[in-house]
Amino acid sequence: MSKKSRILDTVLETAKGLHDIGIIDGITMREFEAFTFKPVPQFSAQDIKGIRLRAKVSQPVLAQLMNVSPSTVKKWETGENHPEGPALRLLDLIQDNGINIFQ
Image (cartoon, rainbow, N blue to C red; front, side, top):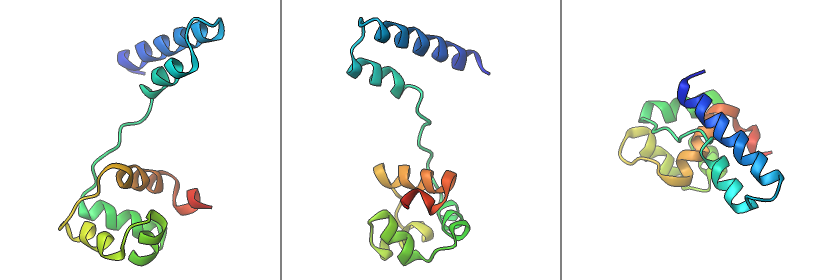
């Protein structure tokens, strides 16, 4: 475990303790918890195609799961366009958990 990770764990544990005794409200606690979220990676065209192939779905099926057009997925896989925002998070979730996250 890195020094940064240990510090973050200590800060989060302290914040939880303060939340438990009512010094920190729920909103502030969620802000502290947000620091522990995994950063969203950038995906290359090859990465995106690999995610789709490992999930064993076609471009239209991936598009439907992600609520984007099939042409959008095609453009991502050819490098013509790049996913942003929620699409990046969804790709990251699919990469880590497969398409079962949609069931």
